[in-house]
Image 1 (cartoon, one colour):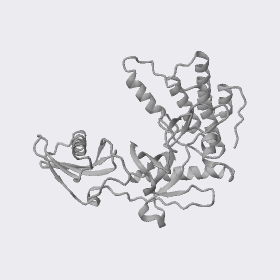
Image 2 (cartoon, rainbow, N blue to C red):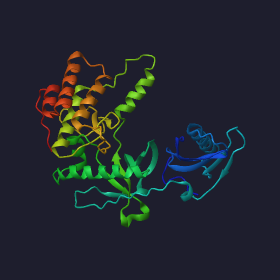
Image 3 (cartoon, one colour):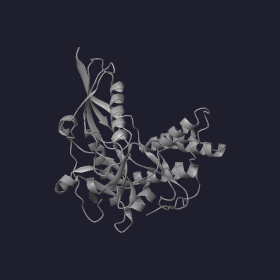
Image 4 (cartoon, helix red, strand yellow):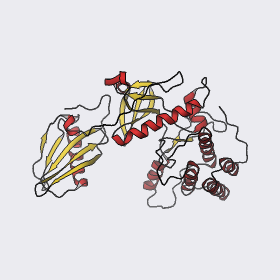
Length: 359
């Protein structure tokens, strides 16, 4: 039986059901994954009425009840339940029988002095759930986000993240502070290290990437604002400024000039980096900055980064209490980005001051 993942802090479970199987007239079962604690279970129910939400709730309740009773992770990983609230039986099976294996592999070998460093998984401590495939953790005393390969579908995205950062590093001077410039020039959260499994250090099998913790996403701020202002619709204000959007547009322009496509610019992948942790940029001392994470695989419906940035501008406008002048500038800049993809013209619309960035 697998113990709780090394250096992990327990979190209230969030269970998703995968791979349901129905035996007509007898039972249904499903692979249940606790996203918050990174652990697999199996649930079997004595009915063929398949209900994923009910099954997930049953697993969550038993995980939570056991932890709060005994202060540790469940020893069992199989739950045999009844639909009629009858007795529940628990079993312990080898983890490799219950868990869904990750079959796709990704390897990384650092090349040259400017390459992204590697770190073994066991060096990450105080890991705690942030979201699907993302943990907050500490590494060498630094507050970090660990984006992991949780399922086979994550391998391609992690590989693309690494290659995109390597391409950006190649565009920088070999003598610069790469991580600082990554955030300052490109408005991108840098990769501090590629994380490899401690069991297979020689083969450099990648389990994820480590980044500085960048702050909340615009999406999460909007959702929390929606809940707090549920009785007062229309009063959500993210506090985003025209200057912050202009700064982000500068970064996306720099990405384009370096030949790098983000591929998934949206409110979910845009973070507000607090000013105390933000890299100092001209005109931005003491202010939080908008930075990008999660370089995406280009979806068929994704037009380009400029168009997506224009859409993000409009999304922000609808959730901000700007004056008429700022609203007009944001709308005009968004239109330029969506219709022409002209970053320089959009920047001019946002602010007539010259853009003096550089390495």
